[in-house]
Length: 617
Image (cartoon, rainbow, N blue to C red; front, side):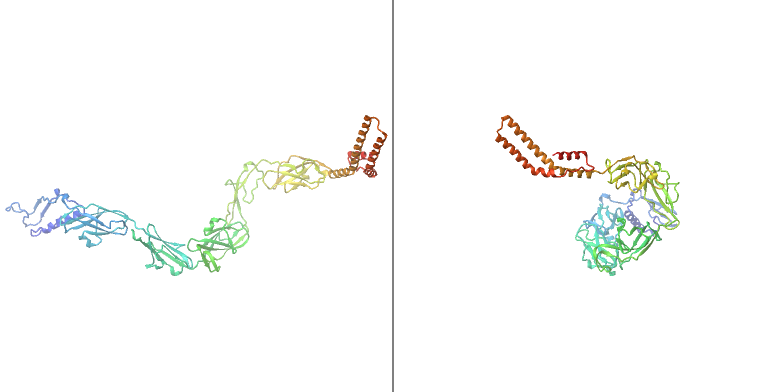
């Protein structure tokens, strides 16, 4: 509704307002329906003139309503000019870039309207409103669509075809500090500027707002011995000759340089501990990335668990009463470092030693109440003592047993014991064996073995002649040695095993019979050898005489077959016989003169017969 714009029959102000309404509708994507647009003029004056008289002689009423149907003259849409949009630059666009858009249309005198993704776009520079150029800084990655339209007066062009611009995220630099952003005087520090994009970058470092010129455009900058003057806020960025020509500046990181730290040791539990207890030691030091070294009574202490090496926690099981002093030290870095404490180069940067943590270790505390478990189920019948006796064990007692303890003072509870498995079998029967096969020789040693394929802890009991416990012999091992067998050691033997209090006995073994016999082997062999040596000459003479005898027999037989032998030849034979006898005389006489060997009292009858035979010769 437009009120009070017609004065003194001058409607120019009214017409101007209507034109502005048309332009406003165009700017806001509103389209007037010409066929249904009506113009109504209302005159509220008591004395007035007809603005549009149909008859000059007609008198106006007090209030005149006049309805005029006006049809604005608008050219067809297809006949309107259509602008085109040109983009500069036309290459790749990254976030943060400024894009210049140019709306080109015929003729002059236009005002330009810009739209981004169908939303009216206000120029960043107000001076661009009356020009065909607009500069836009793109901040979001993705695709953006731009259009333009030109108008002058109440006349406007068509919308241009949309131009799509693809915007990529500009790579952003990132600063990393090794070994940590909190370092200590004398450490080696490396600053790295990473840009997650391809290309050949030149790196620019900044400390605070100032250019850090020492970096010389390098990706990494190393400070070999950092000082407190190196503390500060660091950023970096990159530039290159190709798109994207520069990166986003990294987020700022703060490097803090402090004096060489001194760790502290915290002990858990902090109260008195007892032998067998496990103590947890925690080495607390500023910053991160440390490897920890532990010392007990000034000697290096290796962690019981290798995984504890890279943590600040170590667990120690104390076994001896008294006091123990624990210290720690931290190390990091893979470079050589001159250590003022050791006065030499060491591997990595070391902190100072912590102060000592002294632990007092006493005997296991009294007043424990014990709880027993079988297969993780509490045994209600078990007493609250450290011993649980099963008076008559049965196979139903098979299972896995554990226990723990509680008391009213520190330590208030113990760890649960390791599990032990109780296996119940039938009463065993040992096997009795001997080290000697057959009869035992008098004077020789004999070992008896009582073998039992069962668990340990047994003592062994030996029985001779009868299974009377009053005559038993007890040994700690499964063997029984008779060092020198006598005749009285022969007989039956048994064994059995026992353990516990009261003693639990196995079955008796089967009986083992041991026979004994006299030792004669050594004397008989000696006697036999002596006899053979004494008789050897007689055997030799006997063999010679037998040979001579057979020769004489052969000669006599030959003479009988040939007839009578001449006397001269017979004499020759006799002479030869006498000569043979004389040849054997030196051999026979010493033998015949030698006294006869008398039989030993224990000699066998065969030896006596041999000596008698020799005496006949």
